[in-house]
Amino acid sequence: MFRNKIVDLITAAINITFGIAVLGLFFRFIFRLFGANPSSDFVRFLYDSTNPLLSPFRTIFEPYVIENRYVLEFSTLIAIAIYLLAAWLLTELIQYVNYSGTTYRTRKVVTKVENE
Image 1 (cartoon, rainbow, N blue to C red):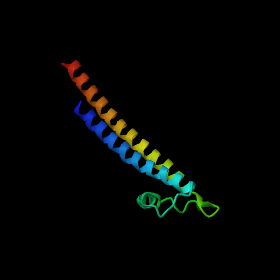
Image 2 (image 1 turned 180 degrees about the horizontal axis):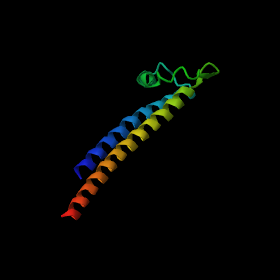
Image 3 (image 1 turned 60 degrees about the horizontal axis):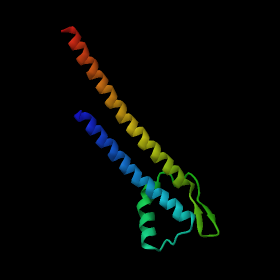
């Protein structure tokens, strides 16, 4: 029972962490797409805080610039997809490991009880 609470806590931490990252990337994508003013404090903070998240994906596609103001960043969309996939895989792995350990312990206890 205690182990399940730890697994739930770890899963929640992963989901919150990746959720905040993906939400930041989503707002970055929307702000760049609609040409938000980069000199605004909030927009600058958003761009600066999401730059490290985009660095592995930045060279995959060049941004598509429309009328020198509106930018379609395909790398941001790819980053969102990869981070969502990574969060899902991590939580599934944790659930699998937890399930495998629980099943093993349950079999061990049932076998021990049957032998007695």
